[in-house]
Image (cartoon, rainbow, N blue to C red):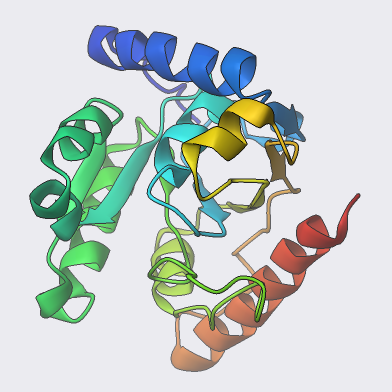
Length: 212
């Protein structure tokens, strides 16, 4: 399996900004980074609660340089943040396409074989995590992973506050947990296979959420 390219200069610069902010200012801790494959491409599947999840995951994955798929509204609603995550390899997708645009972009990135891909399998932010830890997972992550036969690393982001003052006060520990990669080779590239894999992914993600 070919080794991935070294992180690009722009991404390294963006990471130099992101990592100190999250690690030193807000106390980011990373658990399970050793589960990220060192060779070949793969998918990371985290929970999703805030716009800050992509840069947090990017900081946690270093030195792995990931690509992200993000709804294009991020660039229109918060232009400065859109510019920032663009330098962290975020790619806008059109939600009006019914998911086809996201799948096409994801397959293209993985076929290049240079970078891992972060996909938030809930498909949107969970605005009420106190009611339900995970929204129902979409089948798109399973479709992409099984079709490309790449492993999927479940992940969980803990302690992302809703207000800046809570970040500074460190009211909750900010953590990213990576689980063991899930092998996609035993799942069929069919709706049944996608559903079976999605159920497995949900179980593994919730296991990470339950860790102390």
